[in-house]
Structures are given as C-alpha cells and as structure tokens.
Amino acid sequence: MLHTPYEAVIGLEVHCQLQTAAKIFSPESTAFGAEPNTNVDPVSLGHPGTLPVLNRKVLTYAIRMGLATHSSIAERSVFARKHYFYPDLPKGYQISQFATPVCYNGYVEILLDDADEAADEPATKRIGLTRIHMEEDAGKSLHDQPQHTRVDYNRCGVPLLEIVSEPDLRTPGEARRYMEKIRQLVRYLGVCDGNMEEGSLRCDANVSIRRRGSRELGTKTEVKNLNSFRHVEQALAYEIDRQVRLLESQGTVVQETLLWDADRGETRPMRSKEEAHDYRYFPDPDLVPVVITDALLTEVRESLPEMPEARRARFVDDYGLPVYDAAVLTEERAVGDYYEDTLTVLFKRTKGGNTQAQAKAVSNFVMTEVLRVLKEQGGTIADVPVEPKRLADLVYLRLNDELSSSAAQEVFEAMLTSAEDPKTIAKQQNLTQVIDKRAIEPVVNRVLRENKPQVKQYLSGKHGLLGYFIGQVMQRFQGAPDPKVVKQLLKDKLKAKQQAASQ
Image (cartoon, rainbow, N blue to C red; front, side, top):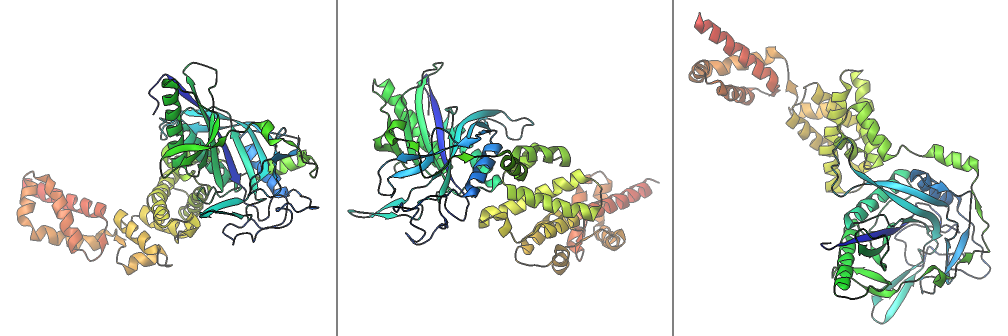
C-alpha cells in the first residue's frame, strides 16, 4: 500500500449505539427493525414546546466506557446544540457535547499488526482517546426510489457515544485492530451489541499523510460509511494510496468528506469538510449541566465486569492455560463465562486432581467444538444447545478414559440434537470405552492365536507389527476398548512369549 517516504496519520471517530430501551431524551422505544416512523414522539421530532430529559442509563453507560478506557471523568459536562440542516434532522440541530465531554484523555491498548498473539507478552501500542461524549442520533434518509428521498425518523434521538481517538494510528491494520478493540470493550461492558451491519457501531476515519519523520500534519480527509472491519481497512488503504499519488504527481489534497463505495472499492467526494465553527455550537438552554457525584462514580466503578486483559492474565495464572487459549476464550465475555461455568462444574465433580489438565481439556473442547458450532450456526453462545453442565460431564468422561477422543467428538455432535446426558448417549451408541483388562484380555489372546505368523515376525524384531495387533483387537472387540489398555496387554503378552522362547 505505502511504498513511499510518506506515513499515514489516522484518527477514528466511532459512534456506538447504546443498548437502552428508551431514547436519550424521551421515553420512546429504540427497538431496531420497527416499521418506519413508528418509534417517534414529539421530543425526538422536535415539536415546539417539548423539552428533553436525559436518560440516566445513557450517562451510566458513558461513565462505564470512560472507566474501561482509563479516561478522566468530568465532574461537570454540558450538552450543546450542533447545527446542520439535513432532512433527517427534524430540529435543525443535534444535541451533542462539544467543549465539555463527559470523558476525556483516555486510551486503549491494541496489538501491533505484526504482533504474535500467542507470545507471553505480545507487542502492543497505546492509542489515545481525545474524548467520549454523549449525543443523539439522526434519522435515516432513504434513496431507494427514483427522484424521491424518503426519511425514516425512528433513529432520531437514539442514544450514542462518540469515541474520538487521537491521531495515533499509522496503518489500516492498526485501525482495524483499534475498531475490534472498541467493539470488544462495548460488548464486555454490555453498553452496545457492536453489530456493525445494523449500524450499532459506525466509524468515520480522518486520514492524512506526511513525510516520515515530520511532525507537521498534512491536509486531512474524512471517510464515512465504514460499516465493517474489512471496509475500514480497505477504505483507508485506498485513501492513503490516493493521497500519495496526488502528492507525487504535484497535486493537492483537498480537505473534504468522502464516502466509501464498497462496490467500486474507492472513495468519492461527498461534501466539503466542515469545521467546528460551521456547526455554530452553543450550550443547549433546555438541558441543565450534567454533574457526576462521587457516589455515582463509585456505583458505576463497582459494577464494572472483569475486563478482557485482566481476565486473560487470570486464565494464564490461575488455570495454567497457554496465552493463545486464554486470548481466544476471553475475546467475548459470554465465551469466557461459558468456559468458567463449565470448569466450575468439572472441578466440583473431580474434587481436585490436576486442575491444569482439566482446564486445558475444557479449553480444547470449547475452542474446537463449541466455537466451531457457533461459527457454523451463528447467533450467540447462549444458542449453543450444549450447556456448561453437560459439557463438563462430557469432559469428565474423556478425562477418565471412558470415551476416546473420537468418541467424545461423536457424543458432542449427538448432544447438539439430544437433551440426554453424554453418558447415556455414549451407552446408546456403544461408544463407552472399556478399560477393564479382564474384559479385553480374551480378545487379545484370540488375536495372538489367530495371527501366529505375525507373532513370529514380531518376536524376530519386526516390532512395527504392534499396531497391526492393536487394530485387530479393536475390530474384534464388541464395543470400544481403551487403546492404551490394549497396547499394554499386547506388549506384556508378546514380551512373555519372547522370554519363553529364549529359555
């Protein structure tokens, strides 16, 4: 992408739609997918004489996000009116925050593009956050009919957090990882579902280029309509390359707002880029300042869940998991909960033992089987029909050698469509592994009797035939004998024959 003496300077503005039942300044529903213009009321439509009232949960969610991103929380913040005139903004202004955001000077850590996620201490980069502020969403213009534009006002007044990064990002890959980090955080906190396809998480990118080593910023453009991680990376790669080509051909980068056209894979002009004074910000006279008390701050801080980095470190320290396993299991909060719920049930059954081996066994099942089903079927981990208790029972059978590895996979597959416990399923399908030597020994003796030429070859030094004997026993046994027990019985009996022949 960038094969020149230039480097990119990227800052992202992420709009996060909050998971509240009501809008930011009115009790109207925020439900997605309603018929156009049904989730509207006089406040969100800006009817004369109406007054906005702040939804307390919106403020609580903003504080949660601020604390999770190491931000300073303003004791006093003010709502402002941001004026612009589009059909989807019925009041002619948007209620937002400008001079005094609720959260400021925070940061998040991202993995570097070339970082090894399995390393004990993968390389990270700190991305500063200028601000996190509360605001209301606008409506949606629909250009789906020739010569007509229709407007759906359902989204008017839906609560948003705008998360503005410092211009610390240097590559499209870093921007993608930053977006993934923001999505992980809002989902862990339960403030947003992070669904980019439905517009719950939207991103605008400010990008400029400058000569490497220079501290002076170039002319920036803003790229809109980035509704997936892939589009963020593709749009930035294209725009950076476009600006480089302009400068190298003695052209000039114009400050403007661009639209990302995913179908054509290019950015195209939308309008000239506005400055803050273009919006004529001033404090909203209908809303009092937001004052955050120590009591509210303490209440929100104590309600925070364990965050991904802390949970990942605990999984490594307490359970002895590899760093890679811990990273996968803590990527989604619900997956980490599922894993720990399973492990808790298993520990109660085993009452001790090798807890590290048990933790790794559960990890293997979750990463290979549970996450596979989740990927194939979609939805959330709550939709996986194998609940933690039944998975713990399955892992217990495997650890006790009552099921082979392949049999355990078969039982898990059956559990997806059956509510039976794994032991019952294993018995029904004749998959329970036999570990009783007395049950296996007659079949071993029979195989050795019926394969005397192969026994003679083994005794003369062809020890590779041991696998042949194991296969014969497995085929002839009515059930599923433990291969380790079969192998040991064969070795003992063949050793005895060797000793008898040498006497």
